[in-house]
Image 1 (cartoon, rainbow, N blue to C red):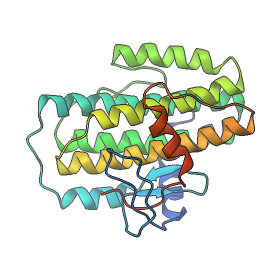
Image 2: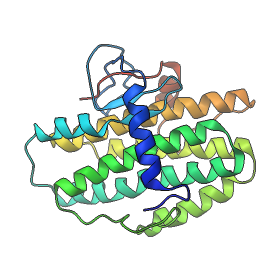
Image 3: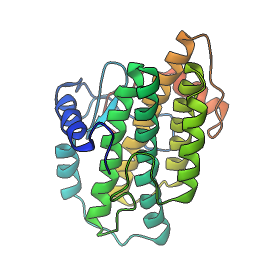
Image 4: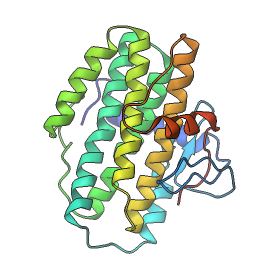
Amino acid sequence: MQSRRGFRARRTAVMVVAAVVLAACSSGGNGNGNGTGNGGGSGPMQVGSNGESNFDPAVLDTRLEAMPKAELTTTETAGLLRMREEEKLAHDVYSTLYDQWQLQVFDNISSSELTHTDAVLTLLDRYDLTDPAAGNAVGEFTNADLQSLYTSLVERGSSSLVDALEVGATIEDLDISDLRSLATDTPDLALVYANLEKGSRNHLRAFTKQLAKNGADYTPSYISQADYDAIIASDMERGSSG
């Protein structure tokens, strides 16, 4: 898929950034909780000073190579296909909203989301699954529900800066909920999903912070208010998830 600014160029830039952002690591949770620990460890996700959470593809590849391949269930396969496009949706919406509002948080997190969708693509390739995003440009999706969601989110986010930031929070809210519903004991999927959820928690914190700066707040639509409050009350997660 191609971003209007060039997916390949952006992927190269993100990989460079991921190599130099903070590598101080903490325990980020197992994908079923709030992941608010701050212990040590080294994982495939690097977190920047403002919460942008990027997969390091070299570290991810090394971790996956040490894990056995599994026989995926139909549910696990469907989950991978959805998350490939759901992470693409996050990138595409943020990229589009950055073009309109020129707020750095959208650019930073859209770059992170590119590494997220690529991490899911790594799993698709590992299991010889057809990539539903192959050949799709920004704003184009194979999943009809995500196509409709993209259109509605961009329309809403174009109304005002606060609406745009609420769209960002909504996407991360949705990601956390969906990833929790896809919880699995399959080691390689669990590794990627745990880090995706940690990234979404960090990005939710980042959008909430920007909303507060603009005199607004966010009410979750997918996770519970208690879960949301616990995430926002905790620090950015900078360590290993799995």
